Amino acid sequence: MTVHIEKDGEITLITLDRPEVRNAVDSGHARELHEAFLAFDNDDSAKVAVFHGAHGHFCAGWDLQSGAKLLREAQGGDAPVFADLDFEAEDMQALGPMGPSRLLLSKPVIAAVSGAAVAGGMELALWCDMRVMEEDAYFGVYCRRFGVPLIDGGTVRLPRLIGLGHAMDLILTGRKVEAAEALQMGLCNRVVPRGTAREAALALARQLAAFPQKTMRADRQSAYAQWDLPLPQALRQEWERGRDCLGEGLQGAARFAGGQGRHGRF
Image (cartoon, rainbow, N blue to C red; front, top):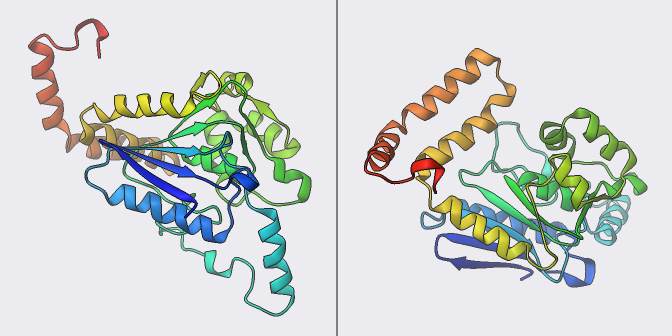
């Protein structure tokens, strides 16, 4: 197994471990990641996941050596490349080329980014809700050099996250984006010293796990759902999700009235 799952109380740590290829992913490892994140989402005791790459790198993308082998097999008359990855738009649990990239989970995932998070590895980081990045880590659409397309959400999530202008710069040039620039353009949420992304992401995950969960998840789902809706419908779905959490909010208001959380304290 090259995908390790650890439990730290209410936090699930999912680690990709293929040091010989900087944690690049092939079809087998993509399935392992997909299964690991589905298991996290179905685990009632888990509230937040941290996605981490072992040995100093997050993920170097798709394993191009494995991809070359698939192409040779296809040319030899075997099954078409990636034929099993076709999916219907309504299927939010479909397997993606990199594994979990088509999932819409019910709970947050935080990427702990060290070293390379490039090509499909960058797409996996974009799939996460938040990104904690080490000061010497970097992003980049490195697959541009080889004509490999972005098929794990890169052309969708990147413009939504940082705007079309920045996204086109990265998508068309494939250039390296280091941590300071990534933070400036909103591509990551935190920059931390080298070697500390995992612990910083775990600390952030514990903070999220301590909040009232029903409300946080409803707000998170609303933020994702609003993209394809006109403003009136987006506001309506926000209300419908939030309405079901008002009881939790009233309990929080009672705690505030009792003296908790005054002056912005957490």
